[in-house]
Length: 144
Image 1 (cartoon, rainbow, N blue to C red):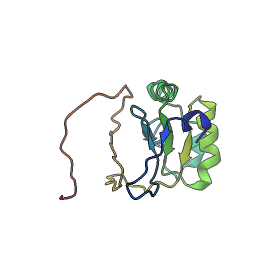
Image 2: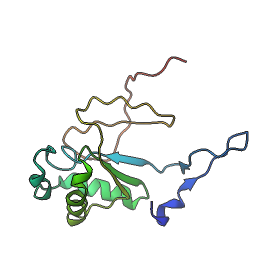
Image 3: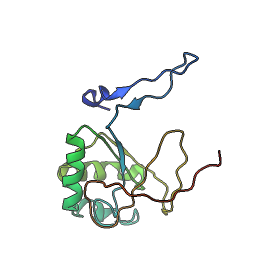
Image 4: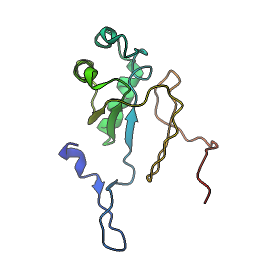
């Protein structure tokens, strides 16, 4: 993470004095953004030649760069493999995407159920990037 955004990180200390994972300041979000089918055409790993030539979705570029400029953390999290890192990084830079990190090797197949000790919010992309809005939904949680 670059130093510009490190100032947005807060270190929390547990009651017993042991450090825990840092959390972001209030109002700062840590976005994990898929690539294929979300910010560009859905290009399968089996057709890597298309990764260099696909066009970005204009609303995705505008929205994500706006979030970046507001101080949010942008991490692209993709099912593309490490073999695709160079073409992916070049494509993101060529099209002007601002981002902090790129994680390769997300599990393929969708229908994710993320389990984490931190709050995780998920938004399914349905063809249009906009600012996020509040909506009540039902979710599955662990029994308390």
